[in-house]
Length: 262
Image 1 (cartoon, helix red, strand yellow):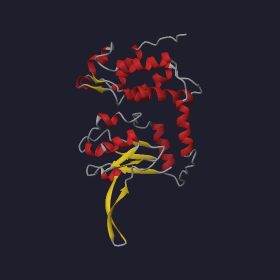
Image 2 (spheres, helix red, strand yellow; image 1 turned 60 degrees about the vertical axis):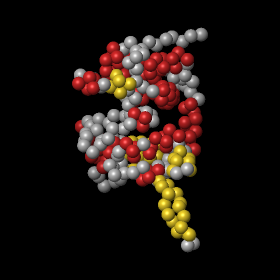
Image 3 (tube, one colour; image 1 turned 135 degrees about the vertical axis):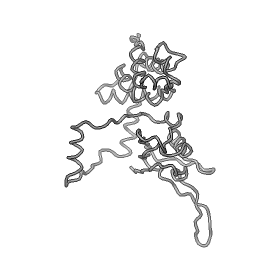
């Protein structure tokens, strides 16, 4: 599979990502020819994505949702599998731009990377400051990745567990919930993509745990990573020191789990 890294900066333009038509000379004739951008890869690393302007960030919207790129009047498919991993700079505020809600919603998970513990710092030093360098060995190819994705979708989820996931999503909306912290601190709740993520991620976790059906615990385990970038808080939450993860925890604690029905 192919890999591409895009360093997001304030002067990065959409054409730098998706590509553009350039003038080329061939046998004395000049014509426009499409030059593909780095988005045409199986794994795309968008490094410090919040340093680019919203105009440039929007270049990823079609790619992440439709798996296609449209330049001019022509739409081109992206390679399969296609995966975008983005990093954000959480410290510096000057020269950074918040990601649009529509783009955040296209990311499957938002994973928080805390500062390493002292044992982790020691391990980092041991692995990166010595004479030997690690050698990576491939463990899967594109066909195996696509096969794994198909297997995940075949994992069954019982109707009462599916209804529980739907209630979790509904409870994240201030006008549809009985959770007090949601009513007080949440501006917008999770989208239908959040529901899709809970189900698919729950299926993956069930397989990783050696089970062949999705349980309540699977939904609860993936909920923070699946919803923390899809639930938007009001200013009052920041003033009171309330985090999105705290609100999600309240939702999971207060959402009723129905028993299975015959």
